Image (cartoon, rainbow, N blue to C red; front, side):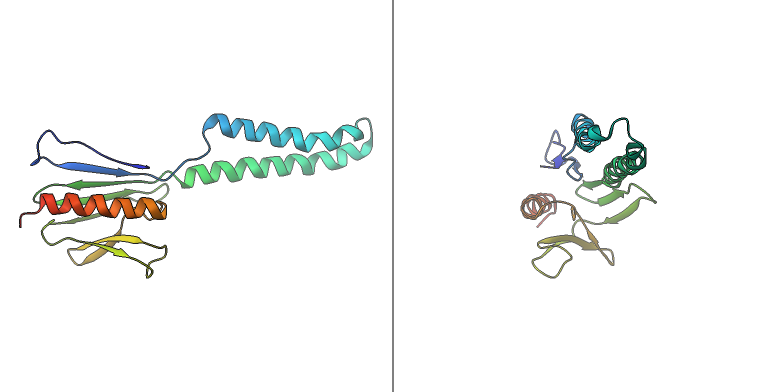
Amino acid sequence: MPYAWSEPPSSDAVVELRLWPHNSLPAKGFAAFILATFTLICIPLLGLLGTVLLWGLLPFAMIALGGMWYALRRNEADRKILEVLTLGRDHMHLVRHNPQGPEQEWQCNPYWAKLIMHQKDGPVPHYVTLSGAGREVEIGAFLSEDERKSLYAELSDRMRRITPP
């Protein structure tokens, strides 16, 4: 799962939840993909070695390879999101570290906070939000549908345990 809870030493301690998006292409996979793409682009050009036509097609092949490189690097940069939820008896604090732009913060007293799962009304199925202090914020929107369901169950359980009856 692309989220993890910190385990507190006691039940009264503050817990922290860290969420991040999947990164399905590691550095070795990126290098292998670019190499394979370069190889596959160059195979048809082998028949044109020694001709003027090779120099006419080579720039377009390299532009295609460069475009693939740029798209994969841009996707990797856009997925550098981190959400950190700190949950204690007297405070909840959510910070979203965006890849570009400022951090977004939300805080509330956990007694008044409400965890909501929007089955179909959100931008994605099983959209999870936290509301309180006059605002409603999303949490884990980049997770898969099953991961959002699991997150909702775990987070509602933790919130029930932390807030007094």
